[in-house]
Structure formats: C-alpha cells, structure tokens
Length: 353
Image 1 (tube, rainbow, N blue to C red):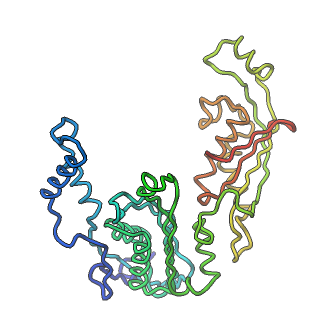
Image 2 (image 1 turned 120 degrees about the vertical axis):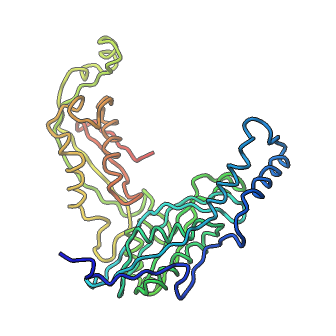
Image 3 (image 1 turned 180 degrees about the horizontal axis):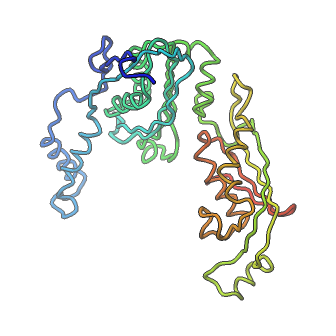
C-alpha cells in the first residue's frame, strides 16, 4: 500500500505557470446588461419584435448562453512524480468539447484526442480534459485551439512528446456557406518525440482511430474478420398479429425451431506498426464471446435474451443487435460489418447506419 505522502504532488496553474497559455478570453469583464440590449437590437434588425411572448426572455437567455460559452474558468493542474518510471504512451481519446467560431459566432462541436509520452511527471486524464475545456470555452479557430492544448501540456509536464488531434463539425459550414452537414475538420499538433519519431506518431494515430489525419473509414483497405458459431432456438411471430396473419407472413418459421448460426465480425483499420495487427483477433474473439455468445448460445431468442426483447429474431434483427453490442467496445469507426448466417443459404449483413 502507498500513502499520499509517498507521492510528489505538484500544483501547476495553466494561467500562472512560467509559460502562460491563455484562451481568447474577453478583453474586459462580461457586461450581461449590455449584451441583452445588443441581442434585443439584433432581433429588431432581423425583423422580429422582442416584445412577442416567445421572445421576451430571449435577449437574457442568449446573453447568458454566450457569456458561458466564452468564459473559461482557471484551474490548477495537479501532477505527480513518475515514480513507477512509466514511459509508454498515455492517451485520452474522444474528449467531447465545444467552442465558438470567432468568425461567425456559431458552435464548433467535436472530440479531442490527447496523448503524451511521460518523462518525470504524470497528470491525471481528468485534468487533460480540463485543459481541453479551458481553451475551448472561448472564441476560437480550431487550428489555434489544437496548438494551445498541446503547448500547455508540453510546457507544464515537460514530457518526451505530446500529440493532440481535434475532430470537429463547424456549424458555420454545416448550416450556411457550403452546407455540408457531418463534415469534420481535423487538425493536429505533434511536439517532441511524437513529432519526430514515426513509430510513436503512428501508435498514437492507430490508438485514436485516426490515420494520416483522417478518421479510419469503414471501407479501409485492411479488413480482418472473426467467425464464431452458436446454437439457438427462435420463433418468427408478431404478438400483435393473429395466428393466421403470422402464418401468412412467416410460413413454417412461425413454429418454434432452432438453428446452428454462424457469426462473422469484420473490422477495418490501419496496421499498428508495433504489433502488425489491426486488432488482436483473440481479443476480438473474447469480446464476441462475452457480449454475444454467452448470452445467446442454447437460448430461446424470443424470451431468454433481455436485449433482444421486443424484436422478431430474424437474421436481420440479430445482425443489428449484435452490432450494437460490439460497437461501444471497439475503436471508433473500426467496426466494418456484422454478418449472421441462419442457414447455409440465408444470411444478413449490417454495416451501421
């Protein structure tokens, strides 16, 4: 057992450390009263009557919301000595963040992937998330935000290297201009060893699911698959229909019967240069067994599997349900397809929405 006194704790303030990293904060104190009047004038200029019932409180609400979005609270980042001499990559993946585009005052919504190679000090990953929030809560350009997060961690921790990748949708591009909803802007900053060592950089990109600055697509060139089997019984029927209607829809499959099913799970991604794998297939097999096979093998799918409740257990519905069981446990975007064979001739494949 180790006691608190065994750890060399240090408090570092992102606002007051030797190298100051400040977000683009308001140059003067926020004046909510003036902001409310400005929103009211804007409504008038756009042709709306601020005295309408639905708009009476809008100036206050908008002013308060904008003030929250551009106000970044200072915080102290606790670090501790790397007494265990851990020098492998530390990664916080898919940290949600939101900011305001300084050109259009429209939201930027995305996820940050932050990693570092420790030297003498380590920081808790919750504090890494606080660093992201600290700089994001302001008027921002995504490229600058990426560099601010990386430089703060690099100067504070003095690690061997830092990597930051931001993926975000800009509503100024989704709602106006080119009007391309779902388009992601990807920016990156690599410092120290991760910038200069290709293997360290590739390890970070592989673990985050980003290759060459872009999210790994489901149709990536390298596909791997795992085949598993199970036996289960089912009955195709809709409880809301009459026996005659069920018979018409499902034929002989309306009767309780069983199948020897085959299940194929396909992943897509880049090859990790350290392992030569997209993913260790033994790990994938263990995941399939835990999340699916142990729950459905030698079961009646209509009644014995809680997460199939309310679904007619066709191969199509099984493929969708199995996808939903696996996807949360796999790297983002890596699950390519789930295929279920009910017989040698009948199968269904699902590739996500």
